[in-house]
Amino acid sequence: MPKRHVQWLLAVFLLSLAVRWPQLGRPLSKNHEFATAQALVVMDVWWERGFIACHGMPAVTYPGLCDGEASGMVYGFMQRAGVRYYLSHLPLAYWTPYAMFSALGLPPSPVPLRIFNLLLHASTAYFLYRFLRTVFRAAHHPSAEQLPPLAAALYLLMPGPLWYHGNVYMSDMAVQLPWAWALAAGARFFLDGPLRVRRGVWFFAALSAALLTEWMGVFVAITFAGHALVRGWRTGEKGAFQAAGIIVALIVLLVGGMLACYAGIAGWHALGEYYTYRWADRGTFVPRADAPLSGFLLGLAINLCFSWAPLLLVLSSALFVRRRMNGRWRLGPAGSAWAWMLIPALVHLLLFLRYAGHEFAVLKLGFALCTASAMVLLAWWERGRSWGVAAGTCTVVLAAAIHTWINRPGDGTATGDAYAIHQERGILIARTARMDEFICVSGTPVEPPIMFYAHRNIQAITMEEAAAGRFPRVDCPIVWFAFARDGCFVRHIPAPSGSRNRPRR
Image (spheres, rainbow, N blue to C red):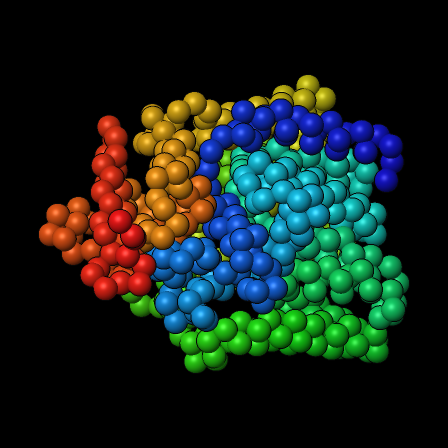
């Protein structure tokens, strides 16, 4: 890696930190930070219950005597011994930051997790650089020296990565790193001469990490397996068929093994029900009159604009430099690189279109968008240095402006509740509710951020139910929090007569 490229990427990463600095310390509240809170709740429960006691599985039920089962977090049939588990993703994205918290002796909290996410962002950009450098040099591309650092810089500075590799952490963001690692290692493995399995150790390790992080890893692995099979069929290379076999074995062993661990919580039937419900909620090919696909297609387009608008403008400007773009898209023997970047992302979006309502779903298109946009920006540079500087500067400034506008600092009252609202309400619950009280809440959504700050499981109840005295039937005293914009009413309700947990006078 040339020294000038190291300096360039380091400077760009520091610039990305400067853009994000006002956001890093703010409370969990806005723009999909519920995902960060979801991950923190899992790690917080591990911290209190013990990682081994939860079998290393993503538990979401706090250990208080009267905390219930986190009914608002996950389906009831995925529970064991009164503990519910959130199994929508594979667990490596939880294991890795929890290992960091454990090594540092720090209880899980937002700022260290955001710093961890920033390091993942830097590492992802680095592996994207290594991947493109290998690919473009193998293709003898005229932009082999300039394009890789420029594409990596774009991935560091665009609105989507700035936010979702900063304040928002979940498996969807974490999988970008092992995918980029698999791209970099896979390029070396497939493009450096005849395939020999012993040279693919790092490639197989990267695929394993992706498979254990998020379902996207399955699509990445299948894409590479398909490439290996096609290459073996065309060339007759024994190593290509061996590589495909190893990849398939990794999918079966790792994903199958984790599903078996998940099934150990409540059985295969319960796990099947769980994923059936998740597919009905997120899958594309599910007829739902209440959620037509047209709305999600529109949402996908909007999300693309918010996350990648500067690059979409750059790509549209290719019409003005189309003569200089002739031949740039073709990568010769390395042409499969486009498939490695695009097929997993497009398949994921196609199968889980209702999931694309989450803006971070389009993060998966970032590698291809940044690569193509870097090609166009270099074409502008060749047209004239002033044109290139102007195009690059406008792209970066627009990206920083969009990121700051969407996630602008301050109390957030212009976009709804104040940023600190979940933190304030969660801390009030933590300070007010006794450990022997069951917590009911009205007037505010029971979401992961408020649960994390309260460090308790919380049951939602409507004002009408509370006014009629229809509180949950539990063998504990109840504390009811009725939130309003101008304050909070708190009511303590004794345990039922004869209850073992009835407080003594």
